[in-house]
Each structure stands twice: as C-alpha cells, then as structure tokens.
Length: 579
Image (cartoon, rainbow, N blue to C red; front, top):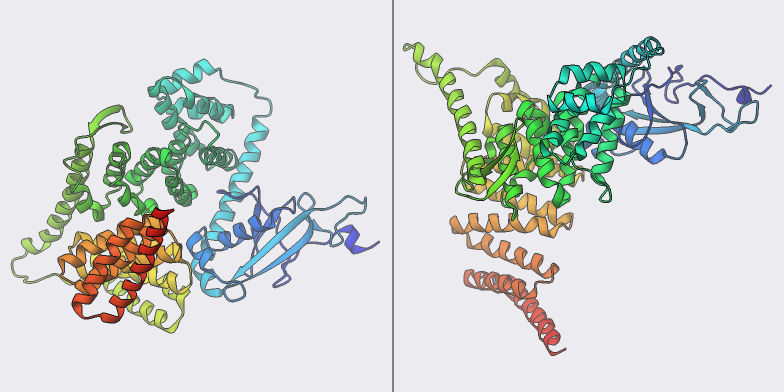
C-alpha cells in the first residue's frame, strides 16, 4: 500500500518538524481558516476548500506579522519571507495525501499555506503569534467543556424577555442568558431595526457589551458576529443600521482581540452615509482605548471637520475630543462658532447640540488635560527650591533617544525593518511622556521608511500625525515640508481630490512665509489637479498665477514651460466652445 494513499504526518517544509493540527484563531477576516506554527518560526494556515489560496496567503502573512497589516504589506517575497504550499491536507484526520485522494478514492482538497518571515520580524512579532495560538487552544477547550455541559440544556429565551432586558440595559442578565442560549445575540441584533431610536441605541450597547464579555470563551461565535456586521456594513444593498456602531462597541470591550479591525471601520469613511456611524464608533473606542485608534490612520478624521454636512462635522469633533487627539486643537477651535444643531448619542442619551459646543467641549477637555500634565510636571521643581533649571530626563526617555539614533543609522544603512521596529518602540515612549516634537520627528521617519519600501498608503498616517503636531506648534516650515510629502504620495496614488486640500493648506502657509517660489510650485500643482478634474477654467487661473510668479522671480524657463501649457489649454477650451 502506498504511503501517499494512506496519508502522511504533516511536516514543516522548512525544517521537517512534525506539525500540530491547526486551530481556529480570532480575529479571522478573509475566510474560515485555521492556524498553526512550527518551532522554527514558520506559520501555516489551513484552507479546507483549496479555493482561497490568495486569501490564505494574506492571512498567513498577517498572522506571522502579529496582526500588523502595515508591516505585512511592506514585506517583499524572497527577501523578507518565504512561502510554501502543501496540498492534499485532510484537516479531520490531520494527514497529508500527496496524490490528492485517500484509500477510498475520496478527493482531498485542503491546502496548508506556509509563511516564514525573516529573523528580524520573528524577534519582534513571534511572541504575539504564540500568544494567539495559546489563547485559541484554551478557548477551544473551554468551549468543548461548555458544549458538553449544555448538551441537555435546551432553554430558549423569548423575544419579549430580551426586549425588556435591552430596554433596561441589563447587561449582566443578558450575558447570563447568552451563555445558556446562543440565539440571544441574534435576538438582540434584530432590535437594531426597531422603530424606537432609544431601543436601537440600547441594542448597540447591549449587543456590543454581551459579545465583548463572551469573546474570550466563545471566540468563534463573536468572530462570526463581527464578520456578519462588517459584511452588512460594506453591502450597500443591505439594511445595516447599527452594524458599524456595534462593531465599535465590541472593539471597545475587546481591544486586544479586535483592535486591528479599527482600520476596517475607518475604511468605511469612503461611504459618505456611513461617516457619522464610523465617527461614533471610533469616538467610543478612542474614549476608552485612545492608543487602539491612534495606531490606525485616524488622521483622516481631521479632514471631516471641514465637511459640508454638519452631522459629520459634529461627530468628528466629538470623536476627536473623546480620544484626546490634542493635535486637532487648532482645527477644532475653528469650529467653536459653528451653530449648526445636530442629534448625537453620547453613550447615555440622544441629545440635540450645536457643532460649536461639541468642538468647544473637545478643546476644553484637551487643554484641561494639558494643563493638568504641566502642573504635575512643575510640582517636583516647586517643592524643592534648592534645585534650579529643568529636571534630568527619565532613564526611559534617555534610552529612547539613544534608540532613536540607532534607528536612524539603520535607516541610512537600508535596514528598514529593523529601523521601523526601533522607531515604533521609541514612539510609544515619546507619546506617553508627551514629547510631541520627538513624536513628530519619529512619525516622519516612519513615513519615510514606508516610502522607501514602496508602501505608500502606510506612510500617510504617520505623516499626517507629524503634520498635525507641527501645525499645533505653529511650525510653518516643517508643516510645509510634510505637506509636500503628503501631496507627493497622493499624486503617486492618483488621488487628486484628496491631494487638493493639502495643496491649499500648503499655499496658505508659504504665502504667510512670503515664499514666492513655493507659492508658484503649489499653484501649478493646484492647476494640475483642476485639469485632471475637468475644471479647465480653474486650472487656467492657477497656472496663470503660477506663471506670473515664476516670471516675476526671473525663473524664465519654468515660466515659459507654463506659458506653453497655458496656450495649449486655452486652445482646447476655445475649440470646445466653438464646437
């Protein structure tokens, strides 16, 4: 009898070690995969269908990177990681059938996708992989024991009882009910479509709360709920009121397990009708776990403070205030006189409030925190009059400054992954100690590293954070440099609409600095954007201003180049009018 037909014990393709059966791990995003790891550092993902190899590859790479999507997308195959496929895997028997069929002739479709990242990534992220696998194994054992105990318990709770508990916000009772009857989650979810807005919001709070409590013991049940909610939020044809808000509540209760889903929630800002829901969810998460939000590209919220929709402006102000995004203070101050009235649910009740009041409250909270921090920092000095001058820095800060220099050296040597790991480490220290200049410098370095690796989307968030700090500190020169970098990225991505507001912000700053050369440069860029948008009259106005500035400075070559372009564009416009 052939060993291939009888099945073989699965072994690691990199070190030939015997492998343990893969287990289900939350959060799962791209499919119903199970996961495992080898002692050599390789990870593997099981796809029982054999038809989702692309998604399995992405999941395996992200799993190996400790759920750090930015890092995963920045890695290069062959250089930063190796991959391998083992086909003919039967997950039920934990055997590999290389010929694709067993002794009975049954087709074996399963595939194990292996990823082995470099030692530098393993050293930084390997511990997270083992933690997730250990947690998943423990949760699976607990779930098995509960299923045995509950086998004879067929108790079901009526919709009426669940409605009364949701109405009363009786979270403890709902949690106990859900432990006995798994359909409780579904029944609470149905209340998201209630005609009573108070009941809807109660359902959001209770569904998120119950799922959050159950997640450690029932990761599969809660994971399926999160995915259903996100799928409905992404489906324009589905009725999805409360889906985004509930996902936000689940993340708020379980930031370690589901915190990485914040980037998916923020991605829904691309859908204008979903923006208030996204902002509410992000505000709730950030109010309790600001670092979870700030680890994602949350600076897109800044642009929403200038939205034409007052509901969006108000929710953006509220969300930024909740998470204590002090970088937004200057932008929020510009909203304090906005008298547009909106409705907002603050976690307790639905209330009507002016956008300006929300902005003022956010500013007051942030400046109050800053004042408290400053007072606390001054106390040691005022209590000891013999000491003069600033106190010596903490050892942790000194170590962080030393590591910052090491990271900069690694960056210049081209060791980008090692540099990124060190910069991210010191960023946490600088952020915690309120060293905003150092935070801005570190964020800029991280952005530059992402650009070096060709990961353009990942560089935007750190650049935006550095920009916000520079604008708050009124450092116009640094702000212009960062604006140029952000504009360049959006031009590379051909996201012209997104680039335009940054052009205008840069133009305003350089005009204040009386920098005619950069004014001309940004005006020409504005003309490029308008031309691509088909707004040819606006493009001509910008080009003409730029051409006049260049000619006035004596930059004849640039002025002549613009002049030729202007004449061509005028010809197109003239031909269009005649037609």
